[in-house]
Amino acid sequence: MSSKRWLAPGLHNLFRALYKQTAFDERNTTVSDYETEEQQVEAIKGWWKDNGSSVILGVVLGVGAILSWNGWRSYQQSQAFAASDVYSEVTEAVDENALERVSSLADSLRSDHGKSAYAAMASLLEAKVLAQENTLNEAADKLQWVIDHSTLDELRVIASVRKARVLLAMGEPQGALDSLPDTEVSEFAGLVAEVKGDIHMALGDKEAARAAYLEAQQGRVSGNPSVLGMKIDDLAVEPPASTAQDENS
Image 1 (cartoon, rainbow, N blue to C red):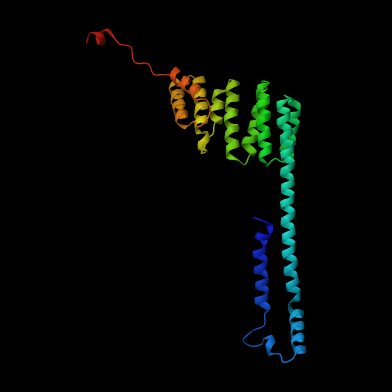
Image 2 (image 1 turned 90 degrees about the vertical axis):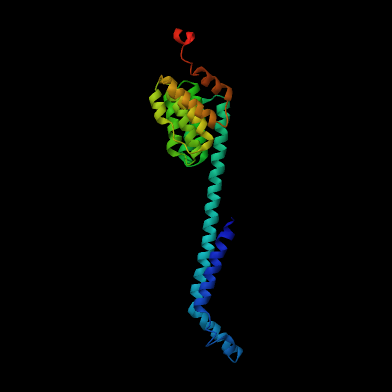
């Protein structure tokens, strides 16, 4: 919605209210009741003397509101463009495997545009590069920043799942399990369940792992279903061994 469309009704209503408060009473005195043109002019002058300041104030406030809104929107757009440009540089630095530059640019986004999605996405990329360099503690810290600061549920879930994997790689399966979200984002339910299965395997709970994998199979909307199927097959429940009595019966 444009600023004009947003403000115009309010400004129009303001003028109508001012007019209603100051209009001539049609039941008692109207301009047509004045017999001469000079009397009409004098009546208008008198009305303006009494009410002109209110009209001017209303116009000033209305115009000021329009200018303020336009200025704010312009500022927001310029900030978004600036964040987008920095994020593009982050992706280029990732492609070049320039870790120091990735970290510097991501730090800039977090400090200058911390509420933007670009800051969260840059932190996810930085964590990915750090994990590839086996700098797992720092990777976990960047993912935690996304969990704490992102305004988008989807990005927070992604960060939580990746942090769980990082903690699992660090040999902290219980911490990984505790970091997994109880997500209401259906698109990620299968992913969360699969990672939960991997964690239960690391904890030695094969039954819980298989249950989680089956849950993931039902809810997974992306990823590699064959890998998930192999995990389930590896945990297939074996039938109880037959006894000699069973064979003779």
